[in-house]
Length: 248
Image 1 (cartoon, rainbow, N blue to C red):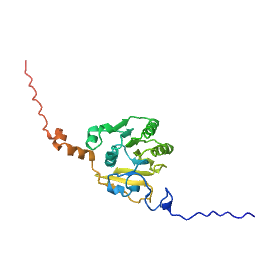
Image 2: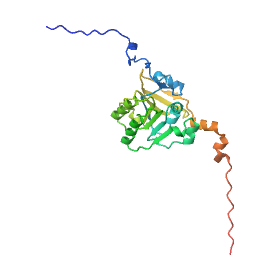
Image 3: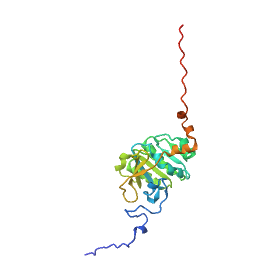
Image 4: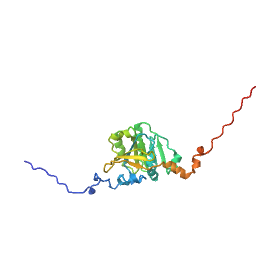
């Protein structure tokens, strides 16, 4: 009879193994992050901010409503390292407003890719650029294996990488290390966030961020309010009196 084989492994703590962390603690391994600009959110994110070189998946009911309110504080810092690239944006960006908020037009690039294959291909090509600051890609029809390729391509950069998808995809598998849902807060003044996936314990509560419209706030700081609302403040022009018809 052959003797049973026994495998004896040396005892070691999770801190001694790279890439391993306790499930009841946030991932604290060395990782480059960028503060989100929201203290309540940073406290719940591994490392205290948005991960750099990793895919972050943002799910929401309708695209184009709350992305900028959530990401603008971090994007203002990211463009100092490289351009901000938009792929498949549902709305045209308002360049003067973004410039007033800290994102100059020279640092913004919009790629109009229509089909899902074009958007994914464009995103992979953009992630090959070393001087990239941030990537925002709207990918409503991306499949898990396509997101896996995007996550792998993200690891070759030190930029912010966001993929926006419909909230109905929350039950689908995703390789993104960080997933969250984004919607309006109950008071309709802030933002409601639910962390679906992170490198740490599962959250049983949602976050409410007091996130006002930062673009309009920046514009008001640059120009007087009466200049912004000149159409409202200026009295309506009086209509010329109609000429009375004279009988022949």
